Length: 120
Image 1: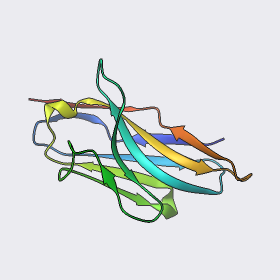
Image 2 (image 1 turned 90 degrees about the horizontal axis):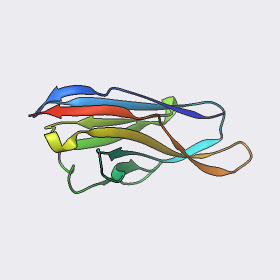
Image 3 (image 1 turned 120 degrees about the horizontal axis):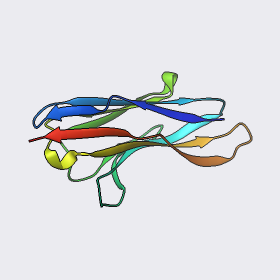
């Protein structure tokens, strides 16, 4: 069974920084794309950033230049460095990974979510 375990959320003042981590645990063949999404109260879940196993990253326009996504394939971990945080970044952040099982089946997995709150 595969699980995505997130950490790193919290409360920070506007202009501050946080770093989120998400590690895939369990048995699987490989991980393709990894990414971060967020959902603010009363809003739909939205893409924040994605990173493939190889190739260029992708960011929502609202976070470009402030957030950086990276991954450590040896640790099956994806990171989201968030700088210059704004109150509108307040949301529950979810990790996502597209994982290939030992049987070659590709499936989407989600983390449990971590709260990020930015005070003004």
